[in-house]
Length: 232
Image (tube, one colour):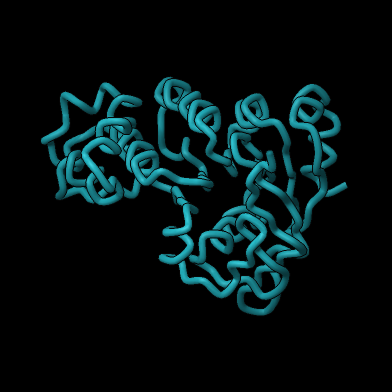
């Protein structure tokens, strides 16, 4: 049986005067986590925005299940199963937790499945999202993504603005999503945790890939990670 893939072939994203990230090729496989790491300003966010359709790419090809999706809108890509969790906690503050989750859940069963992953939310189900803590709001974002039944999940800096104790509670949920068959492309500033969860890793520095391979190797060889971050 062939594993479904999300593939980038020599993708370049340009803004203003020139490219912010160039000639990136990668494959995200269903049921696996691919860590995308690198220094701030390396182009990681621009790359995943190009996959979800937030930002157009200026070169290369993006394929979902072998089919090019370059000309599809962001909405059309989401309908095909590409779900993007952007930086920050993008909840709808005036809506309740239930209403937030209902935006992506296509049935009551999907909503119940999402809540089962986050039992803490059940007692806040009718509370406006604005009244939740930062960690609870991030749970809503993750639960909403799960309710959408993604084929591939793009996560951009899930830990941003969260206390470490909260983030370490939430982070393993990404692994359970992969275990359920979802392909995950994970951008994360806590590099060690991201590499510990991923099977493969890509490092980008100054807009180009400087390492691509086994995540465990990168985690276990700090000097290799250091060179990759420097673009060497």
